[in-house]
Image (cartoon, rainbow, N blue to C red; front, side):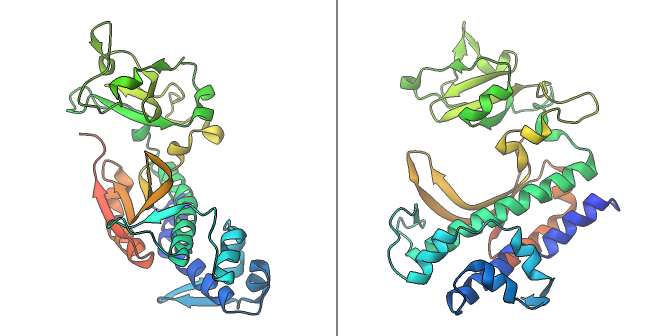
Length: 285
């Protein structure tokens, strides 16, 4: 792979933003600078973090959305009212400093990986995540989660499922329409117990996928489509507790994707630099 997009994606993986961001957060908390912007202006033309050299770090961090309210809480060293609650796997609530770092880390990595995924998708000319399973696959359907504000992107009228039955797309009891399992019907948008999703059945494609494997709503595409195969999984929101997140510190990469298989070593290094665990798993079977 020698395309400009591929090279740009590799550069991001080799120079992840979170280690640089974390260093500058710590500098800011111990510096005399009153604002984050003042700190950025004072950065040298080159910084080294864990043997990774960042040229013009101020320019790179200018494009990082930094929640100055959260930084202010850290600087004050107290408070934290209004912060989401973050718990660890032992169900212990993290302290304010650890909570803010987790929240910022999720935001920084999520934004960066949106760019990385787009670059690699473009270079591979791949539309795998826009299609349902192959006809001979074990998996019966592919689910694309949608936010309520994204429903207008599709001409489908959402099909309501009986919430009292506790239905989700992967529930043990399969939702049926006229005694037919939903995944044997044409593609549609369903309203499940935990939200909406577009269901792509075997051999089906997203209605917005064009004949030349391009998305005709690319600039307005759903949020889940902006991070198709490499996910920042620093935090996992708890479905029954919207203001509580579980600390995962994981980088999730989907091995169905051809570029994930090509970049396993680079992703391992990216995970180490970001202090997260790499999890490789398939999405379709």
